[in-house]
Length: 79
Image (cartoon, rainbow, N blue to C red; front, side, top):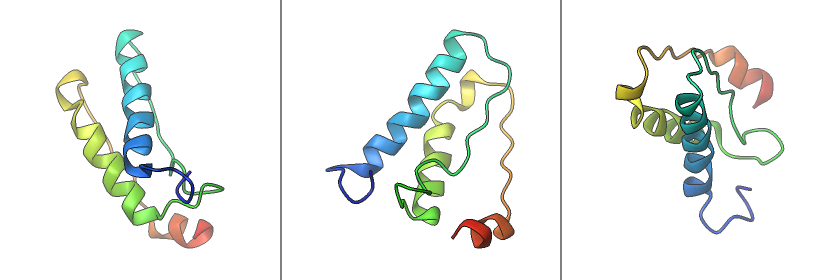
């Protein structure tokens, strides 16, 4: 995705938006996102994290709470 997509930032943001929209529409109480597109699609971790966090913030008023787990060990393990 990252190397071949014309607008990878928009595509990644849309994947978060779609997941959050479906969660909201179906009254899902919990949802988790991993480092979306950072594996086989080779999206840079830091850039993907910025996109994910900013997109999730768009839905801040739709959910009661958002918890962000971040571990440098995970980045090292998969980076």
